[in-house]
Image 1 (cartoon, rainbow, N blue to C red):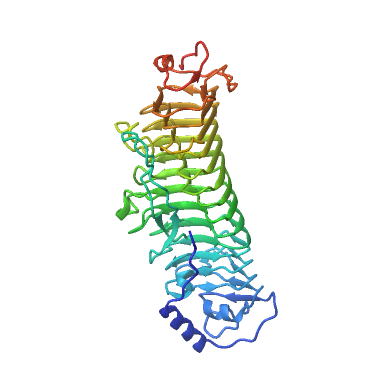
Image 2 (cartoon, helix red, strand yellow):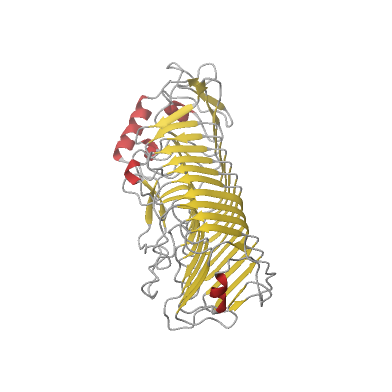
Length: 540
């Protein structure tokens, strides 16, 4: 993916020209000066605290690089400062908070491409309220070390611009009919609306802090997105943010409460902690898109990028949409990226489709690793039982892990998880390899411990292979499966070290799993190589 530079339309150029022609001229200030602006001020101010400006255009023109701009509060009900603001390098834009008032800005014009705040390198935006924007609430590109903290952003992307594009993934050619796809082929990408807070990078290094923000009530667009492409190298901290009532919008194919993406040869390393997503794409609020493809957290690697994402204490509650709506989706779309996601101490509740998705969809040999320790995933609702396993994914599995490609490396580690009330499988593990002239290098590794699964519509654990695999290994220990275990294999060969070890086997499983009596029939003549203890305790 290539990020297009911001564009000035003829209308915005005209608007800017009129502003420059009519605004008063101010003497250049010394670096580090503080300027004041408020919607409650009278005309003719000079930007001091006692005589503040009353427009964003005035303070933008007067201020210089490195200055601080303070938005003083105005009484509730006062129209916000309108027209947006483009910051200069090193500036700080700070809202002052006071009871019964608000430091509010908006952009109902085409200026700054419709963004309410346009970031510059090494800037900081704190404690503002963005009440409306034609495109982004807060947007920046190649912004170096930047902080976005404590802001409330609402009603953005009213013009419904495209923003985040889910990267293309190939169709699964060669998968036998009847085993279908975990997702539909996507050859051009899925378009999302512009995010309330979004930062793009395509060159150089960046260090981003996005914390304690609230993004809500978007009519057409994502909540918070961070994207890298080209040769950018970015580290990001996204902490204690709330996204709620995020809606897909007309002519959009997906909506993300929080999205992260890397393409090109870029790298993105992110710490994501203490964030909350709730009420995403609900039919009551998103009337045109009751069947939205909504995501709580969406992590997307493609091309030759590198991602390392660490997520802790995330809470997702109550999403709308169709079978492809997920609490969290980690997906490699194409190319040979190297990506790892670690998820700890998190909950995802009330999701239509698969609650947790771990998908390596590259046909070129990508490395894709997900580690989970401490997970509650509960309450999927898509009526999937009749379609499983013909369409195994995206139908309401608590945790779905799949890989497609003859050369992929895919791994899932699951610890201390509680999975229940899911409309398909509890844990679904699917490995697909299309036909090819060279020996398959495809490996799928699963490690499950100290996990309980219950109240699933199909199987508590479902492992299935299609085509050739160089290796399928699964170590399962100290876990409880209150429902059936299903194993399946369709054609192809498995490497000699392939095994599912339920206790005392080649992978060193400690066993101590419990299962229902019906599972004994599955284990007696398995289609996949198993190591099992002589007997298991039954789940009570």
